[in-house]
Amino acid sequence: MDLTQITINDFLIQKGYIDIQVKPNKVGLFEVIGKFLDKEMTFLIDTGASNTILNLELAKSFNLSIEELDTPGGGVGTSDAKVYQVDSSPIAIQGFNLADFELLAIDFKHINLSLQAKEIDPVDGVIGADLLNKYGAIIDYKTSTLFLQED
Image 1: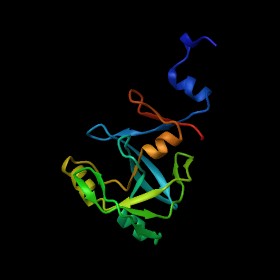
Image 2 (image 1 turned 120 degrees about the horizontal axis):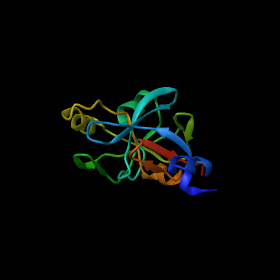
Image 3 (image 1 turned 180 degrees about the horizontal axis):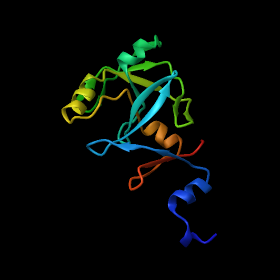
Image 4 (image 1 turned 120 degrees about the vertical axis):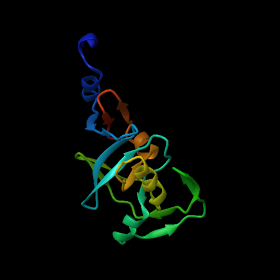
């Protein structure tokens, strides 16, 4: 194979990765539309978030089992948010299922207020480093492409 004639995107696809188009918001954070329990939702792709997190209000609306954890969590604008473990279900992103992970939930009011202050639409969840690591995520910032590979 002549590597001088192949793009990195084509190379990754040949290696079994799938490409997912993501969209940068006004501050450069990537967002992607996904489905959770057949509901279309907007997720931030956050390499700095340890875990994948769902908006607590959404978790409640799905009647998921919710259990408060002893350790508070941090994030945008807070360091002592109550963290909840909720029933996990796959998140489908452009036909790729993210599954078998610990799903957490927090109150997203502070996150969405911070985004709205920057004229960015609210989000429903965050895809964190737990899933990005599990699926060998590679982000091509120039083409706004997230590459994932089955684990």
